[in-house]
Length: 199
Ligand SMILES: [Zn+2]
Image 1 (cartoon, protein in one colour):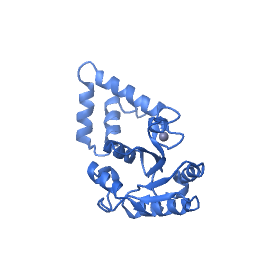
Image 2: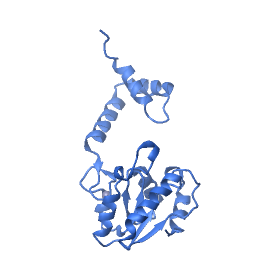
Image 3: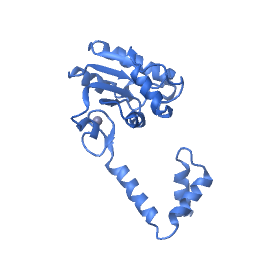
Image 4: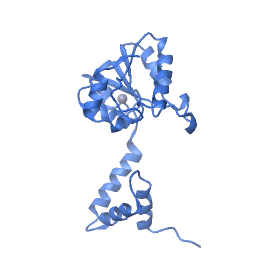
């Protein structure tokens, strides 16, 4: 009977599954974690455990959080009348790094990708429409990526929201087409937000 692989190959294997990590780096990281008194291994294990067990989507905007609502939705100083719609929590993080946006967010959890079987039902569009219908929202900024799929997602969101009468805007075309928001630098993103226009 074949025995389960030992802890070292298992960790190397798991590191290899991460984006941008090849077998050599995975091996180096694993050996680094085994050095000395294993403090790094223990603190990393604890942090990953918390990540897996405690983090969940915000009940309002679907940002990742530990509580019922994320810190942005809970912050009374944020302008809840302006909702910036992004594809992933990492896009939200890009906007937050910019530091100048004072509105709130809505995370779609992806974008329409028919070839990958991602349809409207996989996205949080219904929840977005409900949020806008509930009132108190003046503007929805569609900040999906400047790609064919991102544009298609923005168009669908705009169609679904049109009956609500809310003002719908789209980021300016300053961002390199076909790229993801994650790769846009802070100034590019700030310019795109500043120059947004009615959809
Ligand atoms: Zn939230």
